[in-house]
Image 1 (spheres, rainbow, N blue to C red):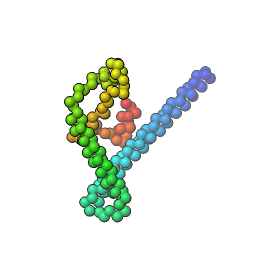
Image 2 (cartoon, rainbow, N blue to C red):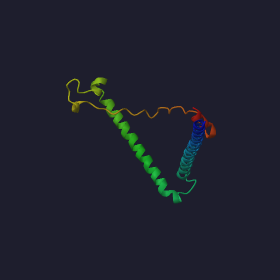
Image 3 (tube, rainbow, N blue to C red):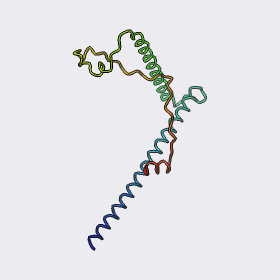
Image 4 (tube, helix red, strand yellow):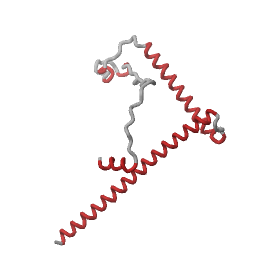
Length: 151
């Protein structure tokens, strides 16, 4: 009987440890969810403040460096878009050359051609007018955590 009592105590202790571990994991998941929601709220606040400063509704004042950084990054993005468009039009002008087959691109050495002469092209960027993927419905709080942990 002593062996069965010992096994029962160990099983009970193990079950308690598992329950505590699950509670800890759920709390950690909820904390991370709240952090993501906080970052999203800050992002929305920043976008709104940027628009208000841009329209002159609120003075630039202490937001000057941050506003300038946002403007700088937007200009860099626009430059990259223009550069991408230039490459796209450049590559459409070069369409006269025969395109290599998939096996030529993946294995240029098969035909005895050295790898240095194989033609490499970067993957085309998705068109700017492409629609974003549809958003999945999000469940937050306890519902999301329960769905996550119960599978």
